[in-house]
Image (cartoon, rainbow, N blue to C red; front, top):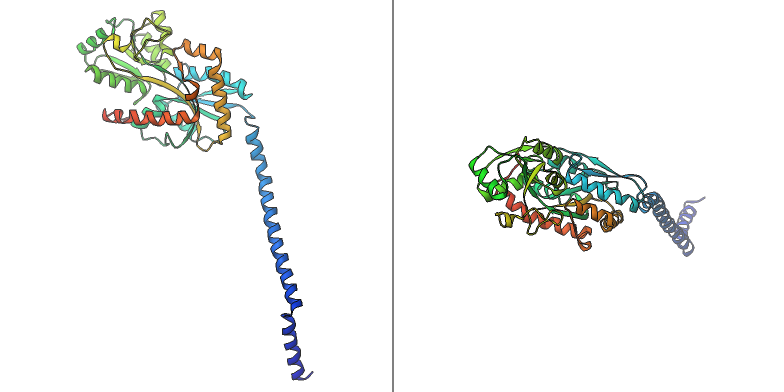
Length: 361
């Protein structure tokens, strides 16, 4: 073939490459490629959805195994007793066992930390209170954030403190107790659950209000404190009615006052601090449930529903009332209400605690 023929053939070939027929062919290939890409993306999305189905199904069938409630104190104390009463009723709503796990130590910080670092799957709840979720944040350098590392489930109940003492203490009312403390500076002792514990905070505020001073003895929980108070090993305690009222009624310890504006319906014979000579010394101890941050909202709703059903149960209400607990009204039992309440308590108490110079060593 001549050079001219070769050139013509090449030129014709180039024209053929860009002819309408070839352009339509290229467009078809491009369209096919785009269709293939779209089809691939649809398939990939479908596969991802299929992979997610077990997780969705798992969330929808929650709970499918036992649930653990971590109590950050030893067995027998007020927080433990309240958790057990509520947990027993929650079993019926959730259709699964609800197990109590006592994780004491460091004034509740170890147990609360256990909840903070648990998987956010709804199978680990934590019961906390004024001490663990308010006071500890002001006196300890915590490895978790009390507001950011937990999801609120619901408020349970509250109660004031009882100021109680060993039965052999030479004082028969609050005024006489204050006078005795002033006459014996640094000789008395008060039991409390750890450095910076709620009982110690109450004791320090009490000393500031009465211009007295005494020593603190630290324990892992409320139950051993009461045991030593009954045995006369320590002199006084700021305690929950759940552990102290049975001992007051049996004559094993003395009760001087309740830290509230009104008397307890369960113990009308115990005067208020106003009546006993220390007006305005009000302290309330509340309890609530939290789960780890990131727990799905539908699981929190199921847990909150179980809590509210428990608190509406006549038997549960009676048992909590028998130990001096006041149940929060239904509109305050929601996760949103607990979130707002918790934040308000921190804003109220942290400045007071820090101004008093209270700090765990």
